[in-house]
Length: 285
Image 1: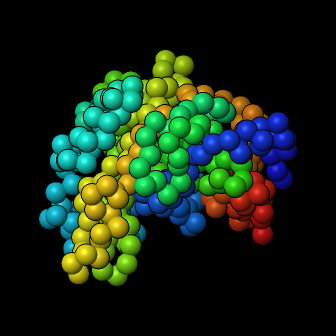
Image 2: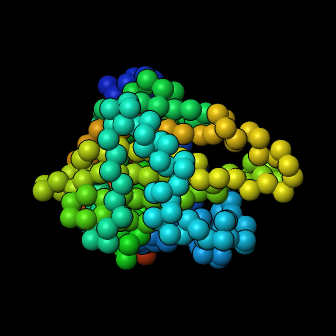
């Protein structure tokens, strides 16, 4: 079984820009090929420092300082990137409230978005447009998971983070630890900032990526991340329209009224184990 809508008229557009998915797998826990159709929103964090175990060791970075999101928002790296964003015309108001809107359901974004600032980004170039695909949000108890897919070569990505907000406004903070070598680990925060409109769409989407620091066991091991070499980004995307008819989806597998992104697994009505492939096809056994 397959979602059979063709996308030839859109594939050409994807040659023009970049997308956030590569960052989602690089920042905030990475893609989880063992994920299933349940709502797993919290990744393991043995040392409780806010950074998922993937890439992080068992010693809390800076004594767990960034497990407190106020320290994240007030960090030098985040303050700097917010200032840069404002200078570029992107006013990002980070949320820390404990009454965020619910982010659940399937969303679709076709065109729009722009990379306003990208320094040492592994995936984006300043001035390029961004085209997205489809997203599947799930939130529980102050945590959020977004699974996303777009046409190749961009493909699948995931974002796990802490959800904060007030009323219709929210921020998702995703902390990431990225080993550069056995002697150097780099720490970043990726933040999705937006608003849930009355019709359920996610609008005014803005994103920042800022460094929080590094940990090196040998002097100079993290030189690749220091000073002007630090990874920083500011970008926006098009509004994400809430989908009520899964047959409108192009980049997710659809089975009996439910949608799945690549690597998700589930049981079908015949009790077979099924998975969604990277070609957006359903395989069952």
